[in-house]
Length: 265
Image (cartoon, rainbow, N blue to C red; front, side):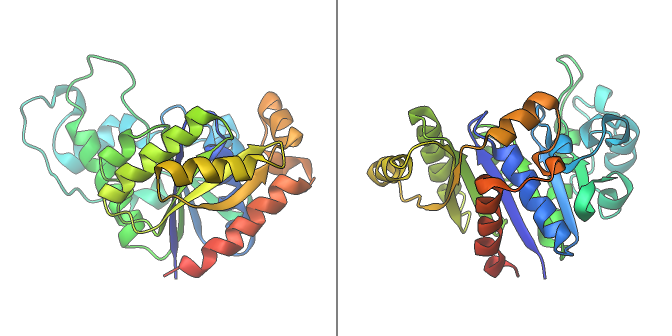
């Protein structure tokens, strides 16, 4: 039995921290967990406790793998035919790294720089890989999506068990969450939940709930309070889980874990 969760939201709202800590909680519970860094600027490795020297290469940057599986060199692919459904079943184990609490980290990557040729072979490989992880395996998979909407435009999150849309109490974050929810609904993502993060005042939850009700059908599943420890961890380049402290925010993430587990299939 597995569970596939995608985490999205405006940049800076804490989606990577939530995705990584959820992954670690399920790993600690004995689940086989893959945490997927689908954000080219993401820092999921830090939250999982994977040191820089042990981080896996981003899949989109492994030219020899792309050439082997799609049949074309990614730097010379413009106008060439390539395999649309490449073999990917061995990639999660071969190209991931061990994180703490029994998690595995897989980094998708993106276009490193302009002028590197057509991105189509990389996209075909990544799409097949995500489909394999979501549809063909009985693992717990946490997808830390890139900020904004572009990942949903590619349809990556369509078959997940739930999409968590993280927002802070700011108006722009709530508006972005509303836009992501609308696009996800159009793509028939089955379950969409709002997560309020960095709440500092008693009225934050009520205010965000009211704003969402005015513009969408997105309901809040969990509210996570502002946590100074998370700020310190970001400053120190460490995972919040490495301090050995609990705190209200981590307690709220554990509550979120329990709320999501009935969705496992």
